Image 1 (cartoon, helix red, strand yellow):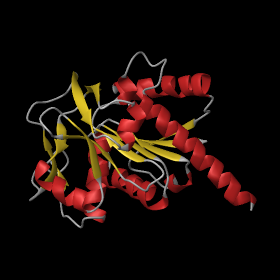
Image 2: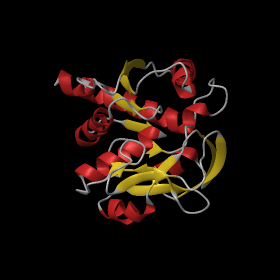
Image 3: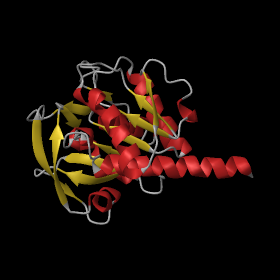
Image 4: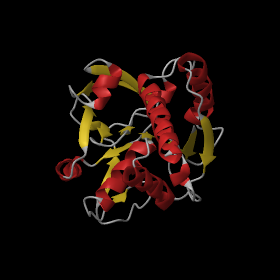
Length: 234
């Protein structure tokens, strides 16, 4: 079961060092053997051939267009997708541009743009933990098994709330919020698995027990892989 880890791998990014530990923990704890392949944002050719796509932290990405393209492929082709931190930001960017038709930018990538979807947070979350309230009945609430959770962040950009209503009106569900009501989780109903968090579930604990979000993504990858196998056998 191959997963594409889309992002510009760096030893200085904590999540990049943590993810291999989680892959091994998933193998030992849940019996899910994932084969991770690191894919830089400036070369996402072939991403459609993977059983899952994880757009990992580490912004600014080398190639914004490549990151957005990986999201589009996952969304349109029903490939399980997880976005964390910058992955959350670029999932929203892809949805705003390709589904909602908005001409919007990420302030970190295009500071001179006319309209921003992602803007600096009023208070940077870099190195902080925060409570996230989860909407009952949503996928993230079912995954976590509670209506709130405390999570770790290394992030300074989030959704420009002025655009939230437009994205929601086109089908995206904002299923997790900070105490002040700002978006922290987004998901797409009807997709096998399409979920992104501004927080970084890969940093939970010491890496020996995958966060429920990571475990749920891995389970979705396994289902997708099995479905592909059945389809090819027919």
